[in-house]
Length: 333
Image 1 (tube, rainbow, N blue to C red):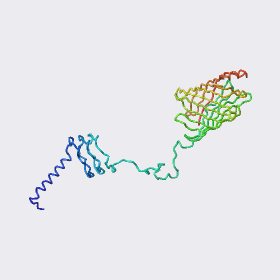
Image 2 (cartoon, rainbow, N blue to C red; image 1 turned 60 degrees about the horizontal axis):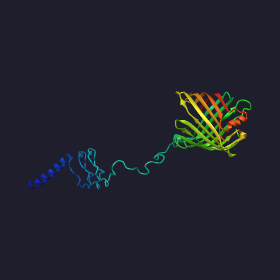
Image 3 (spheres, one colour; image 1 turned 90 degrees about the vertical axis):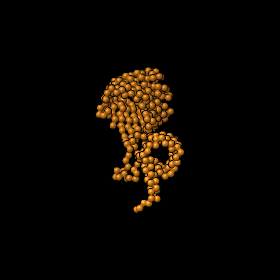
């Protein structure tokens, strides 16, 4: 190809432009003022990998029309002040991130993949389970009686059916058994408290009742329960109990507990007076074995009548206060 002299100025000018643009990409633009620049054009093919923009003031730049979906910013230093930049019109649809589509994940997290021969998996808290807990099965030596308190349940962490019984059985004379049993629906009310509601039967006065209660952990890890029983004859009974576990080591535990019983009206046929009738206390020393599922214990118990019940028991030649050594076991499975 022959180059005429009249083309030389044009070739020289082109070379100068190319040379100038090459220097511009590597230049330091830290002191440049871009406040009046209009960058609304298409910059999708630009390569900014070598640009140093650390000192640039971009507070007045209008970038509302820029399409930056194909720009390469891998080598850019943008540590400068960009507080005044207007990005309201920038199209960044090609960049990573954004909101997923509504059908990105199925509600059961299967993503359309079948569960196979074993079916849909179930969370542990949703599996129905069962359990039995015997909190007290002991003998009172001075009273010659066996005390018992047991609970069985079936259900999940959110809903359960509970069968509970407590009372005493005499080992002498007529071997009378006094018990208060209930069948209730159990449900958590909060982190530390659970509610119960159901029906109950009291063998001591041979009467059925509706039952409602709350059971949980009070501050300082005090196990607390409160149950109300409304009998068919209109009598209202309230049972309150509290228990604390003082752990000496991994096996030895001291457990003090106290219980109160109150009634809404007098019932002389069954030895009941209005108000608080009785208080029962016991202190046990237990030794937990077999992963704490079995705990034999020894202890001492004390019972006393309260209020008008003390006078009524004296009239009937019954003891007002009593104490006894106890021994027994508690377990669960």
